[in-house]
Image 1 (cartoon, rainbow, N blue to C red):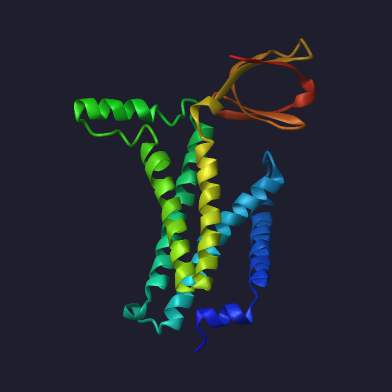
Image 2: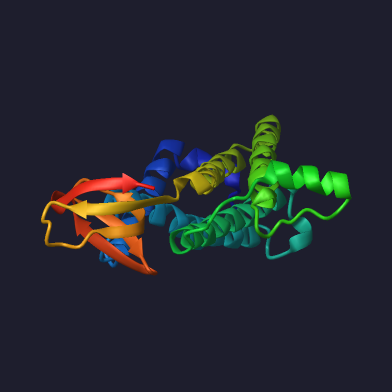
Length: 242
């Protein structure tokens, strides 16, 4: 029965990467095609493809492959396989966290990560528990950095052990995790943009105290009383930031 190392020798790494890129783009386009409006169609395709490929293709295939090659006997799992399964689980969690926080960011005008430094100071002074709910201390300061360091450390171990197939899989997962981490980091309070919008046509009533979600090349997407409006950019005279 062939093992992972033999499969790597049979299939060049360049071919594997090409297949992965094709699948990410293909499924990303399939998902994005059903979405009526996105700010950047290409970016939406890539992110959707990454999440779909990681959660529903790569992880299940790796798990089934490991089970098959080990004869469905868990006690025969080498440490490399166990680490790969662990990496897939934590990356799935990181992608899920970012997805939930992105939805919350678009819905909540008061969304912010909290002043976690101030929260830490207060907790140390009063010996009270740190509030992990309102702020995002747990994710921003602990979870994402620790997972990143853990995967990088395992990359070094896989290289030392000569487990190049596991090394390749871990690199793919690390890329997905860092992408998720980057998006999560962008969800900051300073990205909440509240403004008044005045139109060229004076007969159109200005939109006051609305939240600017995105300014695109041809339109502006705003949130007004929990409703998303898409405004033609050519009709806008002024955006007054509050």
